[in-house]
Length: 478
Ligand code: NDP
Image (cartoon, rainbow, N blue to C red; front, side, top):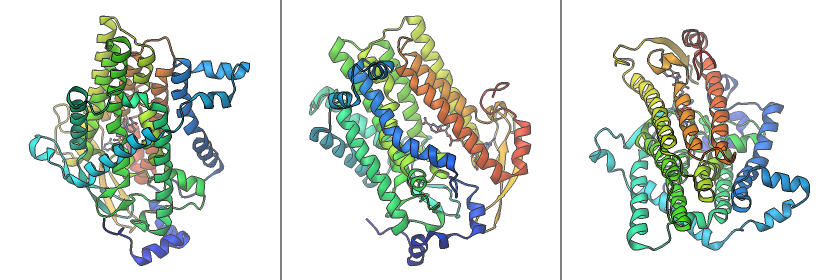
């Protein structure tokens, strides 16, 4: 791999962050991504999350393993003195070398697929945008190039999975479920290792020091990230790799493993498990089909890469986004036909809203408004903003189509889809509903965060936009 692309002076500036970026630059850069200064509230939130998030994941997984997916039972047992924290901890399967080998093979395989196999899919699949693509302009004005080959990696990985399940039988398709808690320790090791590596890298050899943000508070910097787009060599982009693979590719495999476990335990796969597998697979495939488009979303073009993304993609996503499938292994729910059709319709309508809203904005931005939305030329608000170097740029905020219904109707579609996965699990336990609760908090917070950023980026133009489209997620309510 080639050496990281930081010049000597960039390195020196990065080692002495206070000298790296002037206050005028900060003013401009401050409009993007995370904060420059940490207030007490943010610091408390950051430290709490750093301490609590790993235990939240452990709690849910352990609740299934030891308490048949009851989220209240462990807490009640602890409260009544029936058990202790150390007993719960000791009963949980510990780290195993088998899981470590499985996980190491998995991650190395995904890295190889990512860096060694240039995309072929865009040459054979009409409408798919893969291969080398430009990302969004960074705050310091850089435009990174990416090799978009996530769909290809997903297809190859799943082809191998099915070839193994139905033909080769190198390993059991229940392998992921059978090693679930030992795998949790392995994913944590990678999550912490990558977050620590990029934290140190930001000081020693940043990829682009002008896109770094230092607050001087190590907890905040560790969690929210310092570097904007840490890279090794020309193509290994941490954010793109960890955002999509190994977590999101794993999502559908984890679900397939849970379905295989249901088959092994009960001799059949329930319709609820099929619904969860199908609806979540649509979401995952959509992600990879639109991977080039995701380069322009908040995760890639505004967030810095730290523990929040690194650990989150390695641990939080594969373990908590798959809770419905895990729950259904312990509680195989067979829905009535009417309920199953209802869940399916909700999931498909939600997906339509999610996809069309995102598509409308993408089309609008790509064609600079020269397109038709719902059969007409789109209406928009013309706005301007400045970059670090003081250059002025123009942009447009659409007020037609779904973007005229609410300012983040794509999040509304995402939330309805999340609800459909939860509803597939019936109503007897709280655990599968964690996902919709979490997604609501995540997307509402994200919506507020994004609007705060847009407001400082566009100033009075943003105010004109919010006057034209007054609601964020649900017209008339929020
Ligand atoms: P958006 O795709 O909604 O992008 C927001 C940006 O779009 C704004 O910062 C602004 O950027 C631009 N914008 C805002 N309003 C308009 C408008 N009216 N017309 C044109 N451009 C506008 O946000 P995300 O990146 O957060 O989300 C992308 C998708 O990913 C969503 O569908 C979301 O549901 C999904 N998602 C899923 C997650 C999960 O864990 N399942 C997590 C996060 C996201 P600019 O500065 O360019 O003007």
